[in-house]
Length: 243
Figure (cartoon, rainbow, N blue to C red):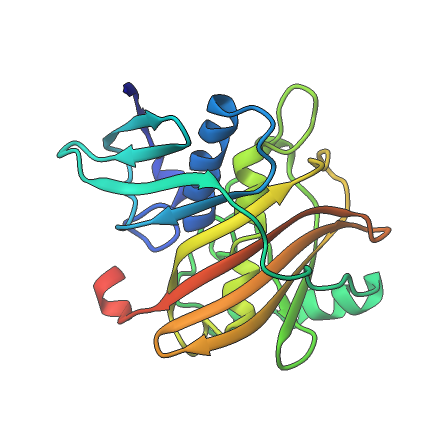
């Protein structure tokens, strides 16, 4: 069944000309939760760079939802899933703050206008999740949702929660030296933080296989309560193809 058309606004880019992977995966997951209430862990896969500012449509099936472009080609799909491992642990607030201040994207960023981690995005325009290095395999950021991305109840929008736990995985996998884009994200969001609530976002590189990078991320309260988590598959790219 094809449902009403939608549009990914230009504001929600990752690479300059395509949608941010975590945000679009969150869109897919949100639509699946509307179709299958009660599903907690969802895997969203992207098959092509999500187009910005053009009409896209939804195909709803018994156990999945699919996002298609104007030519009915698959952009991505979401379905129920499960996690492979435990999430990365929460560092103490002081360590996470030091990591935030050392964010490598301030020096070298392949997608400086990225909605989630772009240093060229202003407050209230991008999420500005700046996850810096804790050690060789782990990154962290102290981050608070801006009210621009929260609903009337002041809680962060579901898609934006997915986006916030997207990009830290790429920085754990050294996107500054090895440009990559998201191919798959499996996530759950247990609690949406409120505007201005200080949180800790963490990311860990799990392994690399050829062009594939496997990472895990998590969102914690400042006190260490787990709010959401994700596991991702990234694909290393030629950045010239996404400029």
